[in-house]
Length: 272
Image: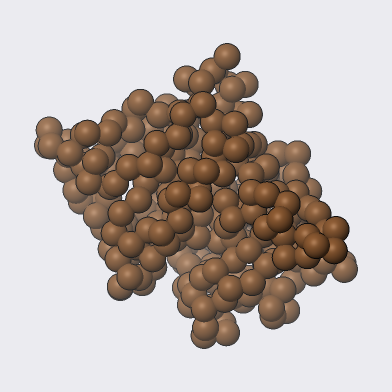
């Protein structure tokens, strides 16, 4: 059986790495390592030794210049100890068929690097961004989400609805053009949407949609389905008692099920 070796990256203000690693172990990964960005840069850690890369949530660089903007520049222009472009290592990881998960600040990093959404199969070209919430405030609440059954996303396979917490100040999706927004729909790259729990339909109503993201978009995938970026925090719902109404018997699909979807894909694909 294929072993799932997951790498959770931290440093420069990231603050959700431990719970992300814990949730990934619960979801079934065989090995989960947490390392600093500098460990990758100095080649103490090699991306090629893993098949699951996770960018957790947090406040990278204090969100200076915009959420994950400084981190995106760091990845794009840094070189390793051997003088190789770090971005080339990341691209090689992706092109080898492995999987990537970006949560909240990690999602912001993936879109600013251009790994998401990859519409038109364009790799590492920025097409969208995540900007300030319409409420002009930090949103810390639970949201109802619907997955897209037509999406190629390997993480959401088998999940219809999910209830997760959000905690962000910059979660509203913006695209470079109306045509690009249409491409997200045409190519089924919208993986998750904020919904009204009564109608199960995407909503723009606040606070059900906590940031005003168009079409209620809460998460994107790439054309291969091997990358998922989402604003909600799946790692923060890893036990039934995390649910805000658990004492009243409320239950729903846990965030660890999203992570487990990626792990099942790796095991089935044989990408060790």
